[in-house]
Figure 1 (cartoon, rainbow, N blue to C red):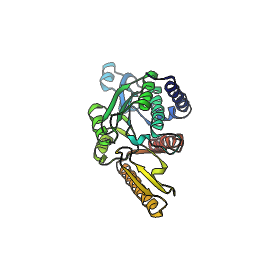
Figure 2: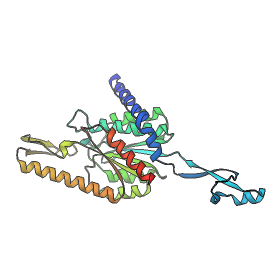
Figure 3: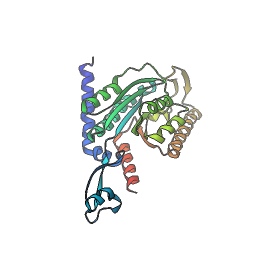
Figure 4: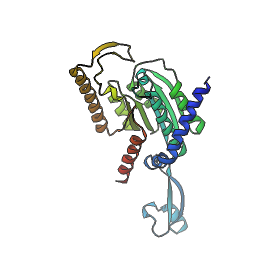
Length: 293
């Protein structure tokens, strides 16, 4: 049972993200995510300017007058939101945790999809498949997805992106748009992710915290791995320790970026300390430019 406080929070996310969808993202979404292709609609009489390649020769021969086939875009898409609920999502050095940002991003993408009459579904995962909600349409369905991302209590604590990719390849057969929302603090997911990208339109959304990339001079700190529970004392007044962490983080980031570039997987990078509107909009602009050219 959801308390009044939790319902209030869901409503706040709905209002905030609906406004963004109305003002910014709905039209952009429609322009960059095309339907699965063109499907035959009808035949009509040829008029000057029609593409002669669309002439229906059987109908033309029957009526002794040129007729052309008319096609329309098969607009309806399936959008899948894959959200990492591993324990590292409960970390945030600013006033918002990864999980809250994930819920707001999921809301924007889901409302954009439903405004365009597309179906949207949800996969919640950790080091196991936690919950799968099949794609559907409608506002009430979207509100359910937001609620699940915010308040579902997972059994697992670690991350298995490869397992999530394998699962999606088994259950989603038609080409879909998939947003993978994660911190990507995981290993050995490249091959199954590449297979998923070959079949689906896969977009990686990395939510990172700035403290994971650069630690300030903060003295001796007890670091706790939220996914394993492992603890380690580190002296961050030591410049070499701070530099070592920064180099490790930058190497991981560069490797990830290089992998996505090679596999032609679009990536959206969002910090817990920043407004996600600008990175999302830049993604839509990049997609739109690519389509135009």
